[in-house]
Image 1 (spheres, rainbow, N blue to C red):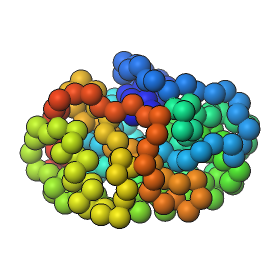
Image 2 (cartoon, rainbow, N blue to C red; image 1 turned 180 degrees about the horizontal axis):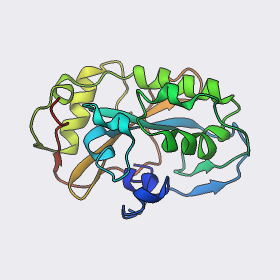
Image 3 (cartoon, one colour; image 1 turned 90 degrees about the vertical axis):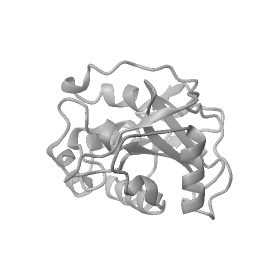
Image 4 (cartoon, rainbow, N blue to C red; image 1 turned 180 degrees about the vertical axis):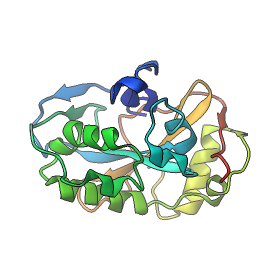
Length: 216
């Protein structure tokens, strides 16, 4: 994983500051030139963990599996550009609340990551939506009713079966405190085709708990 979901979410707004930081092997680069990066890393956060943060948006009240945390410019050496320019964000960020159920997070994602592309805010969030819908979520995770113990390999295998065209090592699992937090997918800079991940740190737990979404 590039960085723990807990780390990235902790700095979004004050109600979320109670999350503990988890170290990552990647190095952020301040003020890189927009457009200079190697590929995209899409973080699909596991909804029950994402929405358990105090202060989460009202959209989190819906039953959710994976939600889109962000689409992040990334480099093969594990570094990544951030905060590349001061540009105004999208006029209607709430349009993406159906896949990213937190308005402060959407604003944060644009300023920290979207500005490192050469796209307009609308183009960037449109690309996020395209990336999100390009991945098939395994049926077992879509239909999960009860908490289950799983291994990182189990999650990777489920995604490989649901997305047979994806190359090997294109999906990386993130965890914290022996719980699934996210699945990350590496995508080509041009065309968003799945590619093998490089320079990322993966969940090193032997097994973890997968918390089921709340029942409707």
